[in-house]
Length: 329
Image (cartoon, rainbow, N blue to C red):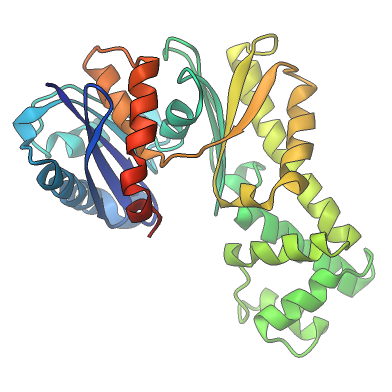
């Protein structure tokens, strides 16, 4: 029997998963953040090592038993980071071949029917990547949000939301119940105090306020509804950029949606769907319904030169349910 390791290194936590060659999940591990931009490469290594050792112990295996490994790495954005990322993974002491990618890609591998297409991430931040059928050509955006005019994750949504609330205060734009919701959220005295405290960094209004926008929109507020529509169109335009890069316009393929913003449902997803359909009418939007680390372990199988068959994919999705509660904690 051959065994495969996958690791998903995120901004807040790292997951590791081990499966056998039939797709049966055998072990899971979790540790701290793995993004080198916040914890450095030593911190990235420690998170990988800890989660890997937990997964190995749970599976009753040792490192030498691993046949292939795959890593989705938050913060791995540019080819200039390839060498240091590889050196950090080498420190794990695996003897098996491995592959590492940006942490958006495992969601595509796990969420699409055949492991290729486009993935759109909308959580705290946003990102978009795409792979062709052979996993040889990649399309992408920068993943740097407001800095590069890309959106929209929760951070970009709130950034734009506060601009619109500011427009309401200055009479540049219409009044909106977003103002009342954010006054209460921040503990401000009134709208002017909200703007004062926000611009002077006294009131921290960040990504975790995004659910308020959806609540106000569902209550019928026009400004909030238009804001979410804007976010959906922005996410669709990111996908369209990647679609054009890869020449997918006339193909039938999956666009995998992953991240907490998509819990907002049709208000966000439908304008995104329409934006994409204008460029790629045969694209299928689908929500990721398994942990991204399942895509990383499939990449481990691919790194070993083995095909990811439909039966392996189905077995992995079925047996990963045994760790779903652990992953969700």
